Image (cartoon, rainbow, N blue to C red; front, side, top):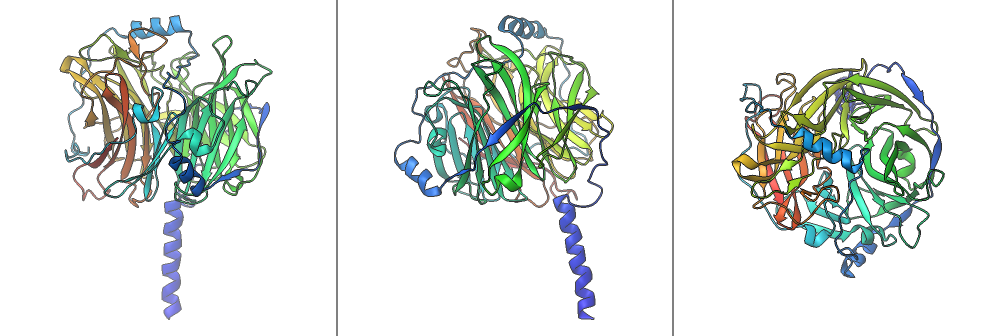
Length: 553
């Protein structure tokens, strides 16, 4: 009789575990009808990994290599558009048409967060060098890892939120000195691994090659040992000076997915976007790999963070240059195999245009808001893919989010969100949980109301009205405007971080908490970065408001 009672309980626990891990239940999509198949054209070869130990990293920090070895310098922004056309379209977009005050709260929507904060000094332009910072990072069970251009900073998530490791990328990876940009960091909660990706520009010591550096932790501790891979992404059949730009990083149950835009730096022309995937079974054991590389793809191509075991992983590109009322959707099958398949489909979306620059109060210097690309990984759960990008709306930069139906290639819901009727809002990133509750963060300025660049967050529950993200709140703002980090594209424009990041907290079993990292203005000449945490109401409504904790750095 005792065993008869135990077995049903064990079965129930197993079923619950499978559901939570996405291994069972209706979360798995039916097979996607293939579209046009894309053939892989090249290979990315990864030799067996080197091991970078915690002791080696500590020694690098103690040896004074926590700061970049080279002086600050700007990171160029590379777009499919030439500079003259880009500037013309950005200026054309800034024709105010007026937009309504943000949606009033509705009964099902979350309320604004509280105002209590905790803050401390941390990485900024003085520490990390280069501009803009390209703030990115992820939450693990006990740590938050922030990466900026050329820097890694690890914080404890619990009070007093101690900074426990701070290193330049060069020192952390023990890499050849050079110019590192566009870092990405994600956390795999199923296997408790950290995955880091950064691109390095060609160096005088090795001008014939360009490398991506990929690092995978051996444990859930980001200050511990890492497997290090150095990936040669040169393609000298195209040009002797090509560059893999704007790498993005996602993953599904079986593989890590890496994308990037490919440019010929001799001409400045965009060539294509590219993608490859690597089996976790190889990466997580430090083994060598040989992955098919798909070229000729639409860009900029954003991979997904997949929350279940869907046999397809969907990558999305909002390719304004080709067609501004469609999103390209790539279905990747067999991502963890030696012969993955890739299919192309399209989803019609409302027409979108490049966003205007963001106006700052008190200066004629504006902030760059990029070119309507998807700037970060989306979230995939079941047949849904969540994404967001910045578009023009009534003459202002405005984020628009989507929930795509990947089975039928249609939009389930879409909507815009912003800080005020007169704000410019841009560089939004999005994450969703297994209930399809949504978390977003973005940058915002509001010149008519004398508001300098601020970081905002908002969220929506799956029970909220479709297409609505309301009750946004400013997590932190800048005391001044930015004037000391000019763009090479326009003398009246300042470079701004090319993305921010929002990630689910794997320590919250409800999936109701997210962490963000974003940029603000430290002084008129220097950027700073900020880390925050905020929560949505639990599904039963027991928590009536968003609560958040800020770590200002």
